[in-house]
Length: 329
Image (cartoon, rainbow, N blue to C red; front, side, top):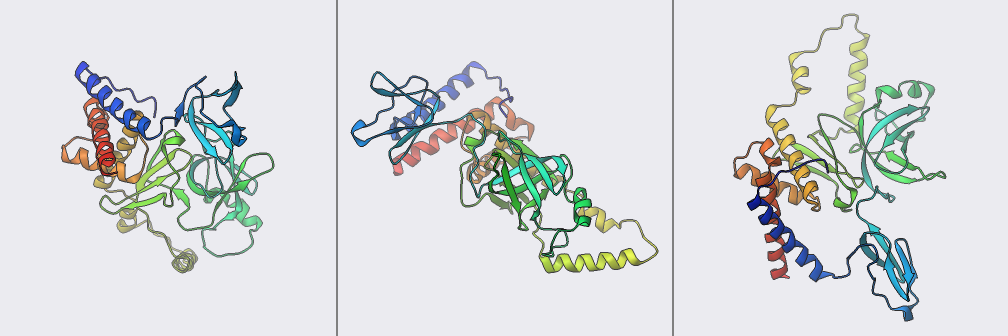
């Protein structure tokens, strides 16, 4: 995402600079000690027995920052949380990853972490939806579930002894993601929330905000029930038992076809995420939908959303939104 370059003329540069300065003024007034750079002094009260954590050091009787980031305080512990860093997982995080290896009884996923994550065969639902022990046949058919370069949604289950992540996908909302775009942003732009799965009915798309900075925008897929899956499995077995096999019908081909309007909505939503990442704004479903609606109201083409004028309009809109929020507060 950082590779998106926007060429601004002189007027747009001035407008963007004013909007960003306005946004910075609101954030600095709300918490002046929130962000620090290297060698900045962190105000603390030594009488309370302060514990110096990651990114801090003591110099001439003062606690100074050794990293650029945000000051975090947990009871007596003071540390600096770096912003532009790799993903730091927590148990229960919703993540989106890409399969890089199919190993015995497990898949290895790239999730923007310092180590690869592991999804065990026993930690996910089988395609037939039946809860049973995994057999050697299931292990041989692993590539029919996930193969290399597949995009997968899962949940962080825990940490292994070597520091790698252990994932699980024991729900219908987890699994393989198809017919969409995978976007990569800085993990600090995606805040942990109660809901990371979003179905935008207006546009017929699904939006998954992974805590690891991987964001999925794709065609909406209905979650299937276990009973329905079992019925489909039984009917497919009966069809396979018949000697004559016919090619896929037109209805089946239409099911695998993504309509043009849905593809345009996916691209428009993806471009909204790209613009937010370029400007360094927090990414959530409300802000994304505001940008999509703004581009539609201005009758902009999808590629024009990545232009300089739209980026400036988004920055000015964010500054105006924060000013109104401050007045209400």
